[in-house]
Image (cartoon, rainbow, N blue to C red; front, side, top):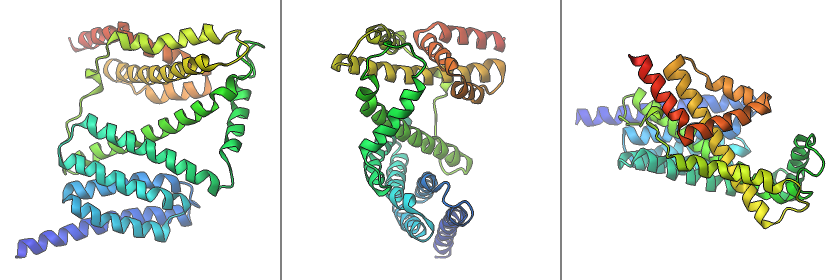
Length: 317
């Protein structure tokens, strides 16, 4: 009887502590930072629910979710109100997967799908609330894209290149946003579950990542083909739109793989963290982004994978 009482007391205390931390952060955001990070609070909410549910039970996580909803109602803003259901659903789904010993890949995939679908739905809700329409958003995106491509030679791209790609660019940006949010929750959860000794999570290190060379060529081919196909065309037809979309997906994938190689080479060979420098250079020196994409292709297609293995083996000798 005494042990049961103490367990219940610890459970309530731990839940109260998590809610107190969340409440303090939300109060600071509301009264000090003027809702500057209101739309990011849901990531912390999801992680808190996951930690509590994995430590005790999924049913207890459901109870804590009610407390999270109450805190959001008291201290949150418009974005918190919209994103809180996503945090609760994501936290409960992820914790259920951890409790049922789903593989890390399955957990991440389901979380990414959940976040991406939710981002599409929430975006359609948020745009009218701020007095905008999708057409106005497209117009703003078109102005930004036209400014970024203003230095290209006349006739290098079809006249309707930007307008034809706007829906695809918009959709890809939402997919990437949802995927990054899901990855962030996934990584934070794994670290905290192990740090607080709640559950051991086996994660395959990036250094064990093996990519079939065919994947590198499949991702790189649309970039080369679209560059020659679109050059000099006067109109953006359906074939060009599909080809350019594949090229954009390939470029993003190869850029990520390039960052992965830079991270591994810096950490395993040079013992330096080069990711921040690489991302910073990509933002301020556009040509460096192309260099990273080329690095990603060489890594995916094989040469840089073999180089990394040789350097690591030589370093260990």
